[in-house]
Length: 304
Image (tube, rainbow, N blue to C red; front, side, top):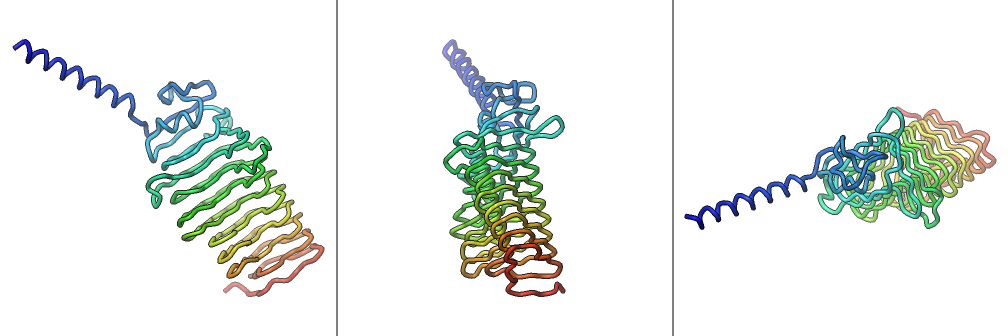
């Protein structure tokens, strides 16, 4: 009888310990970071973490990391579906990146379904050498970037380079003082990029570039003060641009690469050294003005 009672006590204690450990290690669907937090905390609203990197391990796949107050929350490598929301009001969540890319999206499982959302963030590259990017999208099904400022990077503001089919949605994003604004390519599959209200300013090389196997739509956007504003540089890429303004560049719009083209409508390409070069097609409503060498559209067609 004593042996049975002892065994029952051991069993009960073991069950309690395992249950406690499971609860302690459970991942939350929503976690929080704060400038006065600590990464040893559970990342709850009342006991927030200090960094995005500290919070992600405590956040369930498909969950959200939210910012309680303005602060610098560090760089982050994302390997699962997640939302990072910098918040609004007094200020956004900030990333100061020195010698690293701000966010690296490299999904390791569920490659055809995992979606990452980055929202209300300020990403500062601190002019680090080495060609680092504000956001690197290396693997995953979909990336959404909303209300984000990216600046002071020696690589691209947003760099998309995958070996599978993917989608990227960019809305209300400002990129300033980088080598490139948005760069997209894929070696296998179909890379789809949709950008609305994108502003790229003061870039040393390319503003928006489709390098290979990219289908891009660009609307209500401004590209200003760099080497080449809007371009295809690789094979089998198409950019459809509507209501864009390209100014102050060495070349405004350049369509190059086998099987690649750029279609432009209701846009202004003005005050560049070269207006348009390569395979650039014009639809209704374009203004090609005050460029040192205007160039010419390959085809001009009225919209139906």
